[in-house]
Length: 298
Length: 318
Image 1 (tube, rainbow over the protein chains, first blue to last red):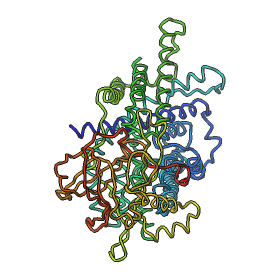
Image 2 (image 1 turned 60 degrees about the vertical axis):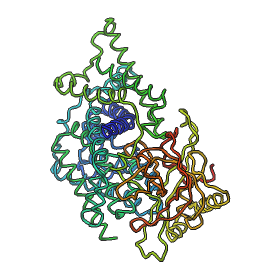
Image 3 (image 1 turned 90 degrees about the vertical axis):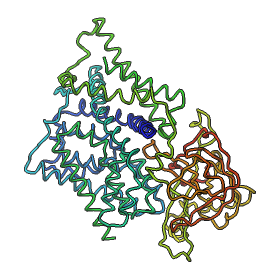
Image 4 (image 1 turned 60 degrees about the horizontal axis):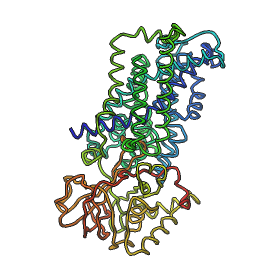
């Protein structure tokens, strides 16, 4: 009962912390929906989706959004015709490549700058690789798998007027719908994450510190289950600094923000199941391979 | 209609938490501006929806509430809409009905605890290990304390050679001298008081310059934590550090030894007076306090400490 009480505290804490960012994500995605013309990406982006991966990486470094806010935005962009491989780059890179995360990681690992550098380099590399895998699996040969599968309301072909009240009413109405759509998946994810946090012993991971192959996997799993925000996970990672190798900690810091319980719930709510499965498999395999490779190179 | 009610309820729950100050049971002060933002947005969106409903019911703007963009959602199955409302009721019900409580030993059991370890001396022949944690102590507080909280750094032991390497690497960013100054200031007084207020990175400095602090008198506060590895006469005096929300809580402990410690309950808040000493636990040197006097107290007004993040290279600011 006591533990359940603690779970309730953590659950509310995660909800209160993320609500502002989910609201922002809903608002951004509504702006994308209303103001970006339906054929915008088809006209502006290179024909071959692979060529749009590096620009997507650069853009995701510019937008300071966390993993909760990026999902509705990516859905909006994909619905407008952005290749889903470029969307995957956003999903992987945006939560890590941003100044706030840099500041907190740098602070928590001030005495271990390798971890800071590796976190950002590996996240960028993983983003491109995951994007490429998604391209190979779903979009090679000019296929456009999901553009019309993803349910999204309120597309009008007419060019919206910036000053008309009707336009802003659509933005507001859509933001509210979006908030409720993403919110239910988020609440579900936050609930499961808070139960894991309070009922699962994180001490157990200490048994796996030795193996070069298993330790990164365990830390990735821990990052997934704990569902921390990318701005806050550096300090938790620092508390493992004495017991785990730096590369395992990098695995935690790179994989945790791109995928965790709460954003898996949100992805499942927004994207077709086969994309979510592909994305999770690609991200996990990429991060793990990168980390183990770096472990032997360094 | 239900969405409007939920938005209003969310706004009211958040306003209630701000008004009572209980929000600090859930979030670190750093997150409060975002919390104010979401509260305002919930309120505005609820008001907007309410206006639409009013306009519709008075027939002024017939059929305007559900524009084409809601068409999909109207089609959604009854089941998924019911599920959505139930899920949104979860945070509302827990928020209104479950009283807030402090994180305690039951969570420390799961998450583990970090001790202030002291760098091994060369004779120890142990694999060197570098650890650092930074936490800070908020100022003296009441329920408006987030307006005046101060950030402070605490750092765990850092090996000398690491520090040298760092000094070369970071140049002016490196603020070791600040810690040295602090150590000198602490050593200058008769007694070291680790309070919630006051701009002192005390535990950091004590771990970094353990030899100089050996045997000095100290007073510090925290709650009692025990695990299976501890003897009857040992407890860990624990503080909870929160970066953003409770999910990222980390626990920092200081080992206390003393005669009657076994009578203390877990989670009891205490103030310990004693002498600084060194203990060797599971191959690690760590700071230990030989307790002379232990006083049971109520939890302090600011039970959590917050990692110091954005002012790291400006020790002069205080």
